[in-house]
Length: 120
Image (tube, rainbow, N blue to C red):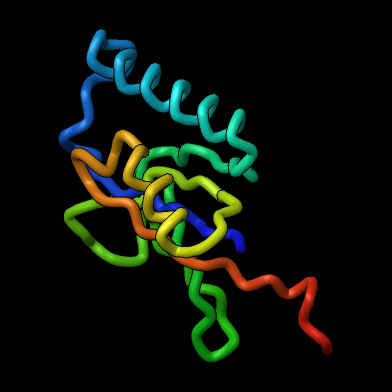
């Protein structure tokens, strides 16, 4: 079964880009990504631009409304995700626990619907 591992952290606490601290964190992510790819469970994923680059879209009474920024103000922001193939929830949680952000923020583990196998 596939699981989305949604990575949340407080952007305001992130180290400055190109700082030694940021480089160390990126190296940990590259190592994690390489490890799960070798294990055959990595199905994809990406980092997201900061929340200031977000646009929220709503349709109200047939009119499109755009708002700069995220849908809601939160302490932690969605910063990226991995899509993994895991045998079960326990396996997915064990993968998520290895993501560096699990130490400083949180990682939400969510099963992915497989609509390709749905009869319609």
